[in-house]
Length: 299
Ligand code: NAD
Image (tube, rainbow, N blue to C red):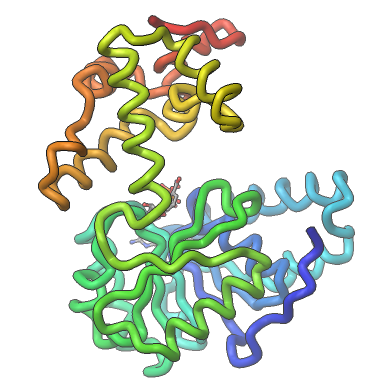
């Protein structure tokens, strides 16, 4: 769907820290929405790789006539890449999308906050870390918000907005307008483990694994049941392999620890697959074996 939304007027420069999967996707959608984007990572090479990925993704969008070649060129011209965090001093909204490691994220905020403009909004794309706790260690808990993009960013239409205990209304409203300007929907989540999408989806996957573990159904029966019986685009075990079984286990553990409710206990079979290194598509094997091209159930 063509984006007819205008960029937020007072956001002239969007800073993105971390040029991995998510950061490069965010840079792509923000530049296509008309924003100037500064994309930084630990080395120039990493940002160059990210820019090449963005270029390739946009070329596919051109060939599918989602965007024109001119839109692609203009968007690429709006992206600056650098390994220098100091350059974020001009940014009006900074999105942190570095590796999911609380100490690393805190260290980046400690480095960057003194150079940011006082009014700059700082967002984290974290999937599992408390926004309130991250915000509390910055100089701007009121201007700090969770902006949780889904993977792959250019395809998924939702961004969860997570208000920390101190996030002010202006920050929330600007963040919401920013997400809308990217042609995406927002859903507001309170700051509790796994927010909304994962809180619902990952326990469903865990339950599908229990269904397999207890012998209620085979891999094939469970995925067929949910695909055709509940109209899900793919079965829960296929989805688990796609997400990564280690990621699914990590989220179940956060829910179990964070909410202290036994209903979130990870299925022992999920633990076993992760311990075997059978973590899904990326490992070549999970609930399906992908090594010969056609996925074959492993149970
Ligand atoms: P990734 O590993 O693809 O990218 C992380 C990037 O951070 C890497 O390029 C790395 O070099 C960079 N980085 C590490 N230390 C840095 C530093 N000191 N300064 C600058 N950059 C640094 O990870 P990802 O999948 O893009 O995840 C990033 C964040 O997004 C995480 O918080 C993750 O939880 C969250 N997230 C991921 C997904 C997903 O499905 N992958 C979905 C939603 C949210």
